[in-house]
Length: 297
Image 1 (spheres, rainbow, N blue to C red):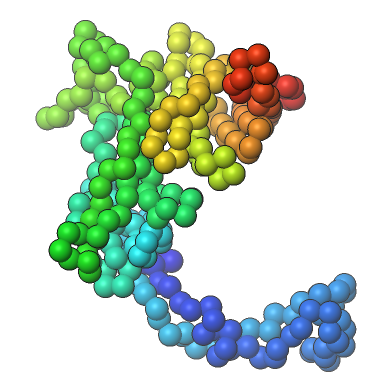
Image 2 (image 1 turned 120 degrees about the vertical axis):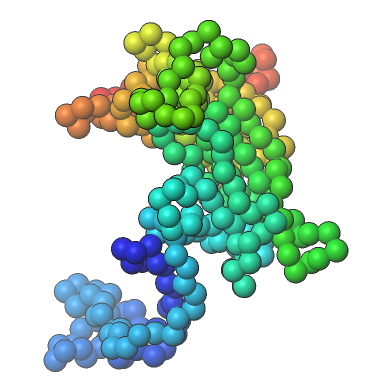
């Protein structure tokens, strides 16, 4: 990656074949730099046996704003933002083989928010794309264009929407995106704390579930809930309110792994709180619930 936004890809296999000084085998004796030892054992360790002395063969290069670059999908595609500041929040999805833009491959979430939306290839094996904004989560899929198998198009698989009052902003004073008088005005920021806003989206591979954390600031206290959605259709399966408050000014991380949910909160002065929830089965109701098991600061 370069400060200009240029991203270049090289073949590690070609680098290893071209610049390896000596082949090493773990657990085998080796003489290196005048010293003899066993590779991988202390104090000999693993010698740095690759020394790049020339520019390797270039596989691929592209220019992207802030070096943002992702590869995924079936067949291989990549996601970039054009290397211009005014293009921030605009994502281009292109074919890796020839750099051609996919049909409907320019994705831009029409929202006015303090925090940027984000996009990434789905962690499952579907080759889909997840695009997250303050009030919606779009799951996109790659399909062949009809009558043209060489080109692919982007289409919506499903959308998860935040639970908001449709007319809430009508009676509120309007504000500008930057706080100053500009030509375009907005009724309310899309990530206004008083509206339900998506903060975290994750995927649990063993249960094949999408987990979404939504937060609403009520007076001085924020409340969050963790929603489990069907990964295939986006259907809401269960919503779990988090017992602890959620301060939107703090840093938060939520991890979901099988039957455990961890919420880690970082407060000022590097004070951390960890909230652990465990999923248990209620035989009477034959459904899964979440109980808070412990809290540690």
